Image (cartoon, rainbow, N blue to C red; front, side, top):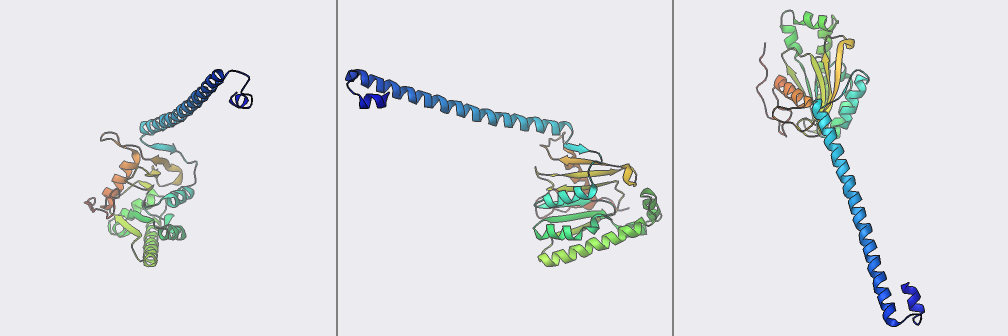
Length: 260
């Protein structure tokens, strides 16, 4: 309309043309404002929907204490590899014998060279050998008469990996901790003590592979009486080893569990 009035100024009186131009311009401004308000509302609606979805996911994690999966649908080695390679700052690997993990030297070396701090927490093989009857108990539990020998070898292998990697990195990136107690669970936890904490826990009903139960776990906002499984597992590993794995660097020493 404005363009028509410009090229045909004599069609209507000048005051009418001016009024039409003003009204048309005002209409365009109002339409643009309405479109802008609509788009802002849409973006706010998307943001609100995303916030609601996150709150619902958080509530679901809270209901299950942060357990996000359960069962044996995943391969143990794949879970370990994914958790290890997904970690950016710190990883703790807890178990009894580390007989499988100790074979992953190349994977451990790659992660450590990329800056990852890795802690292995396992039973002290010397304690198992010194304690009368303990080697037999472990052998029967895992249905493996030579289990103590396998644990001793795994401990030597992990120490060798730690020495080699730390020498290559010129600092301590890999550390092997031991405890003198019986633990019937294993765990691999990335980023302990942070909101990004995640990993998996394996409870050994018996030592046989078919009698083990695994859970995938993630952190949610802990409360004093409502703590996530992953936080409780990290606390248990810290108590066993005597180190606070949820603390920032440097790791604060804790009182270790009582030596039998």
